Amino acid sequence: QTQPTRGGYGGSSQQGDAGDKTVGVIHKLLREKGYGFIRPTAAVGADEIFFALPGSLQPSLLAEDVYEGMQVRYTPALDARQGKMRASAVEKARPAMSSSSSCTTSAAGSLPSFAPSWAR
Image (tube, rainbow, N blue to C red):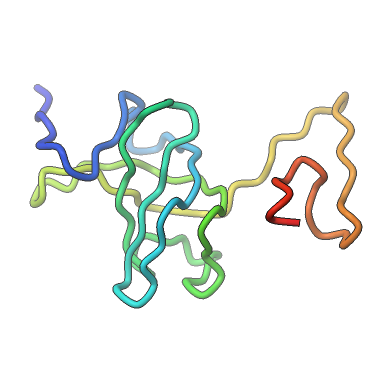
């Protein structure tokens, strides 16, 4: 049996098992209110998914290190009380590199060349 979501913070058809990680970008961050929203990257047009600061973050990611536009991995989970999807176990995404890919870093040396120009 699956529970229908009641709109709101959405999610996508990629809900998967609890251990599945989904990649997304922090679209909106309301640091002063203690939460934000992630836009899944794999599902075009998918609803944003809610996350709480610092409660949804992995211990390796500090709330002060989170920023809008940051690529993250998270586990989508249904909040049974709210009836909406939310992100848990949010961590910084690491780009997958294959042995045949060539990635250079920007002049600053800290961001890969495929990072958007506004992030360099």
